[in-house]
Structure formats: structure tokens, C-alpha cells
Amino acid sequence: MTRNVLEAVNKVREFFEIEGFPGDFFAQLEKVDYINKYNLLLFKEDIDKLSGFIGYGANDMAVICVNYKRSQGHQNFTLAHEVGHWFLHKGKSISDDDSVLGYSSDRVEQEANEFAGELLYPEEYLVRDYYVAIEQDLFLTGNRAQFGRYVNELCHKYCLSFEMVLRRLLYKNKQGNQYRKVRKEIEKALGGKVSESFDRDFYAVNEDLSQYQKFMKPYKELQQKVDYLVENGKIGKATGESIKLRNGAEID
Image (cartoon, rainbow, N blue to C red):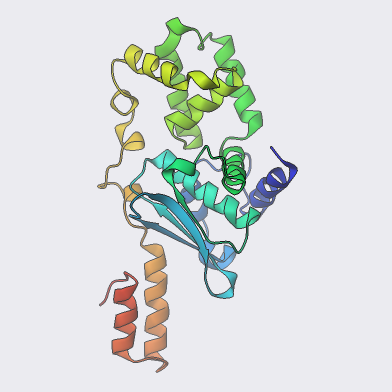
């Protein structure tokens, strides 16, 4: 990891007051009025093949959108990845499809991936978890089911995808190129896919749950600001309703 990435991670931990790791980064942000405190507008939208994107609004406000039609761990990594762009490549609007998250040959995307990985799953915790796996012989072929259960625990702890956690442990064990093989062996030992063996709502999209729905907070913020402008005669009611409709806010 390069020094500038590590410095950016440390800045973000201080900026967002993160001790250790954030876990569910969305939940961390929801504890405060992040729009005004951090000058950040956060959306969740269905953006097709994109995992997320970052842009900039008035007064240098960072605008981050995350695709809610992805697993919880995927969404969490996307948010951290976009925050990485914010602190490492500020002012540059970037759209990220699924293929660049986690692994990319592009330097800018590599930096954002390294940033997200270290923020959500710091190296010191990875080393600790790796040695637990070593002590329990979890890398042995005969212990694939136990290994799968251990990875699942870590996924919930750090709010990351099964693939992300498994890959990091395997890379630490110098087995990075065996991910597909080990994943298949784990699922065979468990008797089904990860989403069938563990918490399905964590690994598969369920739009009945709030984490897999449109994020309404920015729209409510927009609605309040438009209503204020209408009430104070800055814009007409029809104009206000048009702005709301165009931007997805609810019209009273």
C-alpha cells in the first residue's frame, strides 16, 4: 500500500471519527447529520451496471451514489471506494462498474480499492484473523465447512462480501490464485451456495429490507429546501413541483 493511500485512510478515520473500522459504513454516517457536518450527499439508487459513482455539487459538496441492488457487503465496499476517490482524487467525477471494485489495472481504481480495503478491513485485523485461521487449521482441505463459517462471521463483522474476505485471507496464505477452487470446495462442504447456507438477506438482494431500497434522506433534504424557496417567494409553486418531480422527491 502506498503512503498516500494510507495517509488518506488515516485522514478519513479522523474525519469521520472512526475507531478501528466502521463495520456498516452507512450506519456510521447515519449517526450524525452528515450532509451538513461532512458536506456529503449520499444517494442509493438503481444505477444498472454501475456499483456507484462520485460527483460534486455546489460549494464542493461530494455527491456519492451507491447501487442498492447489490449485496450489503458490496454496497459497503462501494461506499468506501467512492469515499476513497473523494479523498484521493478530489474534484474528479468517477463512475465505477462492478468490474473495477476490488481488482483493477487502472491506478486510480487500484488506489480506491486499496483505500476501501484498509478502511473496512485494516491490515492489523486481517493479520489477527489470519492467525486464528492458521491456529484452527482452517486452510486445510478437510476443514472447508469450518472455514466457510469463519469467513461468514468475518463478513458480518466487517460488513463485507464473502468473496472479499475469502480472497484477503487466501492472499495472506499465499493462495490468492485458488479463490474459485476454494470457494467451490467450501460450498460443496456446506451443501449449498453461501447465500443458501448463511444469512440470505446479507448476501442476496431483498428489496423488502431498507438496505436494499432507495435512500430517501437526500430527497427529503431537497424537498425541504425547495419548499423553503417556494414559501419565501424565491421560486413559484409550479417550478418547485417540477424540481421535485425531476429529482425524484415526493410531491405533497
